[in-house]
Image (cartoon, rainbow, N blue to C red):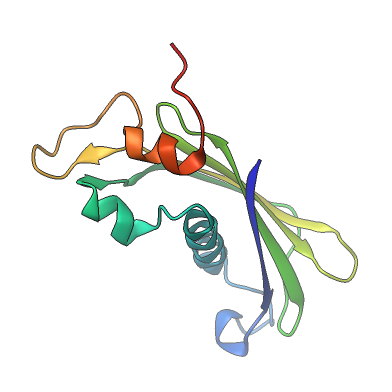
Length: 137
């Protein structure tokens, strides 16, 4: 299983007047953790581009369960769950102290050929090689 975890201490500039994290910052937290996950198997955005692909997000879903607050230490976990035709990454944001789930999310990315700007219906071989998996036939 390919998984990355990132701990974040909620900064003051991410909260509103009620000291609750503004909803849009959760996307930043999962993006930070997604980048960490991709770096773990050497397929971060510069590597994607160098291999002729971009991977735009085509679907992003968040379920807010409870609010994170200023000064709270949160743990963001990103788990790669699909890679053959797209990248699907599931996320869980928890309070580090109580382990309470604060947010659940899923992102979907698809490979696009940089030259032709066409979406690929299978993940590029380089991704599978980096993951150490065989293409299912």
